[in-house]
Length: 217
Ligand SMILES: Nc1nc2c(ncn2[C@@H]2O[C@H](COP(=O)(O)OP(=O)(O)O)[C@@H](O)[C@H]2O)c(=O)[nH]1
Ligand SMILES: [Mg+2]
Image (cartoon, rainbow, N blue to C red; front, side, top):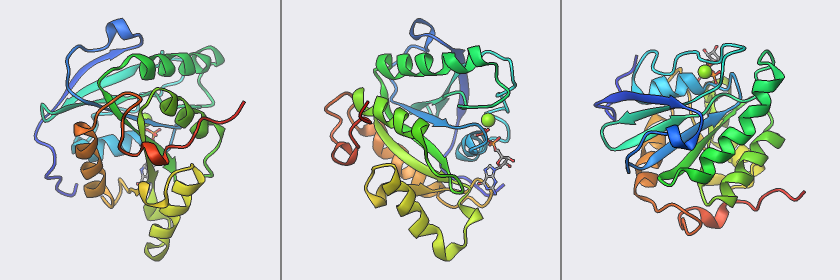
């Protein structure tokens, strides 16, 4: 593994489904969301420099949980369950939306959501719906374009800008990331640090100007 100078200490706090079970405390929180197979576990492991912090936890049939970690004693990370795994029973898939929306609504200390998008896939309704919820609850979204090593170095910047725009953000908002090579790690950490200090709620000024309106019905 490439050295990661950003992490001193990571602790698993707990898993939870409903707000009354979320870990207490006032540290700012950053959430991570993405479709199954987008590279979420790989990103979290790379981000925290742990080989298997975010275990492959999308085992079909299992209850889907929000997993909370504390990083550097400075902020908490919430790993949302991957969305859309075909083998997950319908009942569990249907529980995903209400669980995540309740989290977005109630988690006061949530400062930003990292929305992972695979560089080889067109963002779809799911991504737009999630952005719509975040906008509604005043939560900043940072698009992270994963597996950026799959496109040639000369096209990476342009691709990130295109995906960012396709999601309704300003082109420069997106971050290209590769868990494989470590590209984007520094930029991602810089964004996390910035959002740790940001205010939450509907007045969350930073980025609000280019957060798209919720999709029309
Ligand atoms: N080339 C490449 N493959 C990746 C990257 N990140 C994840 N993968 C691969 O994508 C697959 C899914 O990754 P995983 O982290 O388990 O995705 P998750 O389901 O979103 O947690 C695995 O085969 C990973 O090795 C990346 O940055 N580059
Ligand atoms: Mg995973």
